[in-house]
Image (cartoon, rainbow, N blue to C red; front, side):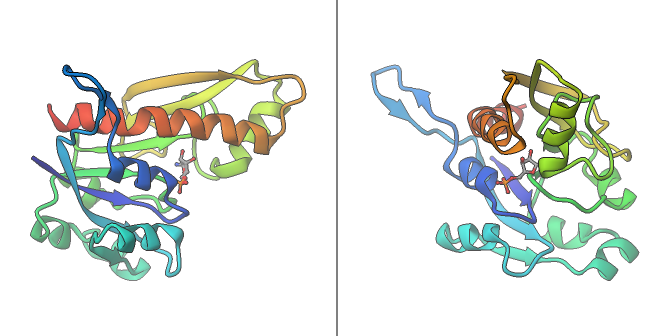
Length: 197
Ligand code: GRF
């Protein structure tokens, strides 16, 4: 079974959904959650972040990382390996990743972005900045992108996209809510699928 580390700096709503696992329908009826992965570690760069509380509630170990060590060393690769981690999920982690870490987990590291890449990605494109830009450009649709991570921000191979409509009276907050529904619906399922490859 894949041992997953989730990197998050924020509230951790996606981390929570991934910890719970995707809902599926049992062949004998009813809804079940069968997880082909284990979330073994939550990696965070912000003391007090909501995701740390979620980790505590689920008895998942946490690793609070230090900027100097993250960028000057090998990106905590040794600690991740020692914890038996073989797959990384970025869910609201804003630091760029050091090359050593990207190389070590090439093809085993994914990210979720709250827009339809390649548009509205790159440095500074996070949170409501993304939704503001989408609305300012009068896009008819937005959505989510789940993609592999490479050395360039929001650039790796796209695994899955899901869309929502942008209405004429849309606000960044209302769009954020629509996008979050998509994230929570698709991210755990995508992680589960990739964990079985
Ligand atoms: C999500 O919108 C995700 O797309 C982006 O960061 C946000 C994380 O939200 N990369 P949460 O902390 O999981 O609620």
